[in-house]
Length: 313
Image 1 (spheres, helix red, strand yellow):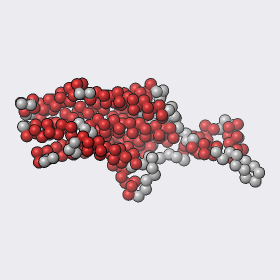
Image 2 (spheres, rainbow, N blue to C red; image 1 turned 90 degrees about the horizontal axis):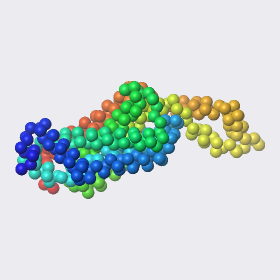
Image 3 (cartoon, one colour; image 1 turned 45 degrees about the vertical axis):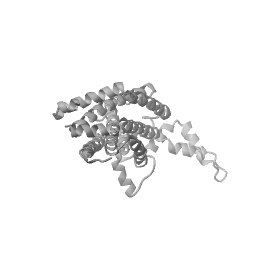
Image 4 (cartoon, rainbow, N blue to C red; image 1 turned 45 degrees about the horizontal axis):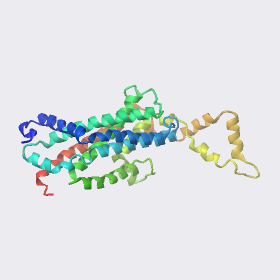
C-alpha cells in the first residue's frame, strides 16, 4: 500500500510526494539539471561578453540570451516529470491520491530547483566578468531584483512544461512538443523579429516578452549609449560626394574633439522605449504577468490530471 493512501489529508500527501521528489532528485539523477544549467549559463555568458549593461545593443542581446537560458531551464525541469509516471499516478489516484496535493508537491519542488538554477546563473554571470549595476528598482538591490526576475521567468516556463507533462501520455510526445514551445517563445518575444498586427498581440502571451522587458527596465536600457548608428556610418567613411568624403570629415572631427561618447549617448535617446523605462511599475507589471502565467498553467496541470481515471491511453 502506498504511503499516500495511509495519509489521506491533502497537506500530508504534499509532504509525502515532496519527499518522493527529493529522493528522486538524489537517487535518480534529477540533480543533473543543476550542472547542465551551469554549462548552458557559461556558454551564453561567454557569447554575450561584457557589453551587457554598457550599451543598448549589448544589454538587449544579453538580456534576451539570459531569458532564453531561464526558459530553457524551466522547460527541461518538468517536461517529463509527470508523464513518465502516468501509470503510477492513475493507480494511486484510484487509491485515494489528491491530484492537487501531487501537483502542489511538484510546484514546491520545481520552485526549489528554479531557485538553485537562478543562484547558479547569477554566479556564473559574475564569474564571467559581468558586473551588475548597484541600484534596484523594487528591493533596492539590483542583484535581488534581477534574481527575482530570473526566478519568475524560469518558474513560469517550468509550470508551462509541467502542464504539458500532465496532458501528454508519454515522454516521447512531451519531448516532441517542447521544441514548438521554445520556438513560440523566441519568435513571438518581439525581440528577434519585428512583429505587427495580430502577431504583435501574441507577444503578451509569451514569457520571453515580459522577461526581456523586465530585465531591460532593471538595466536602465534607455539611459545607455547606442553604437549601431556610429558603426553603420563608419562603413561609409570612404564614400565620396563631389570629390569629398563628408562622413569621414564629420567622424574625424568627432574623434578629434573627444565627442564620441556624447554622440553615442545622443544616439541612444532616439532608441528609447517606453516599456523599457526604469520604473518600479514596469518591473512589477512584468512580474505580475509571469506570476499569472505560472498560476494559470498550474491550474491547467491540476485540471488535466483530475480526469486521469477516464484516460484510456
